[in-house]
Length: 193
Image 1: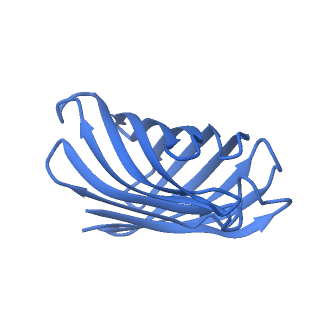
Image 2: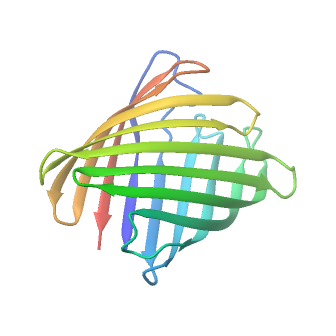
């Protein structure tokens, strides 16, 4: 099982959209080597928008394969900036590759609102680099289309400290490269149990 929670702890510039406090919660349970169930939620835009999804993800490749591919399906609620809630379905595609000193990953998702026919898309690319047993860095780029049809691009470099075998703390910067160009300092806790 894996639990992650956090958000932005400080804001600079005109941070509103797509960077604000944006608290997140993510939980997953590995039911088997290939099947994972979980919850994924966040709020954004000063609490005016957000979502909560239950999901299932299925790994398409053998655990020994160099490249890992997975598909996911989710269902949940999306809160739009005008306060309305919309039942939403989500499909995801994941690719990852372990490296001798880290990993590469690309995660893509599309969400579709069943009532208001709102579509959101997002692609995250991540490169992780392990310096030693205690310290790891990650560089993530994100592009997507939000609830109001706004296109966003951001970059998020971070450093990850392994406090214990099952506890990591991630501190980083979230910099919007489009929109309001706001900046946020983020803090997350990762727990494995």
